[in-house]
Length: 350
Image (cartoon, rainbow, N blue to C red; front, side, top):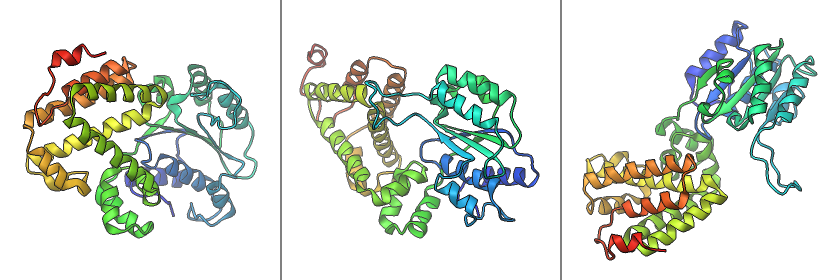
């Protein structure tokens, strides 16, 4: 049995391909982080090498080895982890050397299974040289060899590589499906399962981690508390926080972008309350605060600032000046109490 939650359309397609021996030689699994791309890739590797009549059985030696990452014919590569590296600068891409290694392995027959499977996690992080090297292999595929590329953004991959793969989209799952899965499969308390099913943005993997990792919820609450504080302060304090976020962005882009994502969801909740859809909000544990805060803003103010947050995130991803982008965002954030300092003073700050 496939150990995959949701994604029934993709599962049906792969199962049909397996039964008809008509699988593609390369697949591109596209979807947000933690939506289940790696789980699906591993399950497909099991199905190709399973010893049972109805694969994947998850009980045979082959399935168990693949699940443990110990099967000789199933390899996962990604951006190298440098915890014990002596390199001064950590590597942030999949290099040509890694691709050449799997190319060499792909030219050899399977060692202990029926098929060789190469899973490239974070395929968008391949260097140009690595992507071009992989392209040659994808153009002339070997028998009994399957490549599975996982990505959150196929636009960062060369179009030539994308065109050689069969693309399978893994969209976010529904909140009700995730809530049920968390309570039945992971023993989550119902109230927590309901909250996590909304906070995870349709990505079950994040919710599963958060069931046992309280730090994720603590971190999220700290970010929202800071937002509620920043709304009330003057421009000097807002600019100081913008500088703090900009410094953080230079060290870890994803953490800062995650903060903006939380902010966007918060203001979206204010919008939903404003138009009478309070049952659809994400931050259900803070519903009273959201309802109270929504009273202090007009629909136009809320909608405009949601667009401002989205624009700031896009500018940061395009490597715009992070401090300038975040300072403008602080200026645009509406305040309930009115301005205690003139905007011109804020613009001359620093």
